[in-house]
Image (cartoon, rainbow, N blue to C red; front, side):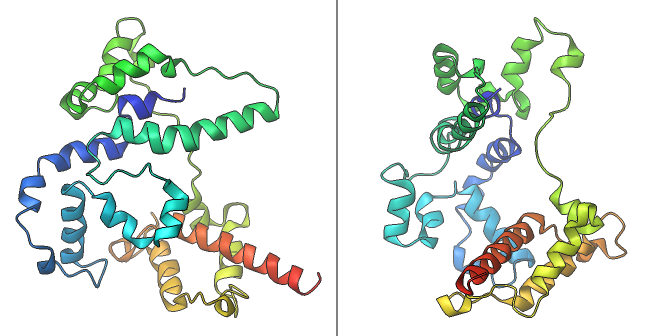
Length: 257
């Protein structure tokens, strides 16, 4: 149910945060100017990103990509200035409430369904948020504390069952053409004008880099002959596809269609 992963540290990012804490002292000793970031695939660029993450990813740095008014509209006064050291409180404030619970509420109300969230019972949630990361994740195990309690009442095959998520395998679909998704992607992103009206609005996209992403995404597939040249761009390509569909829809409206 909602809250299990967020309050009891069930995501890979929680594992990464716990590991990065041990490297923070080393990252603080590396001057940022020594780590150029021009090429995202270069080892120095990867070290730079690791350094930022190990320092705790200060929100002031992450938020610098937004203008002041946009940032205020997105976050109000909720954005803390320190490093993200408490994933439970962070997820509860910025992910669980504004995102997951809102979608659950909207979807359930649409079909007149009453939804319960047992992990969000007040006393349980308060207790989880009071625990340090080391207690919630003993030996770095995701949801380790929750599983230890559950093991007293449930058989191992239930407690140790692999996570059943709802992620869509969009990356594979873009390579295999499942449901015509690959062809749809290519029809949009390799068209003469993939984003009609966007350039006129002052937004310029590097189409050479988009084509590079398409090739790298193919190279990252299981059947690729050059897997070391590939990178998984599934989420980025999906966002570009949606943007292209939206731009074309607006263009048809402008033309009276």
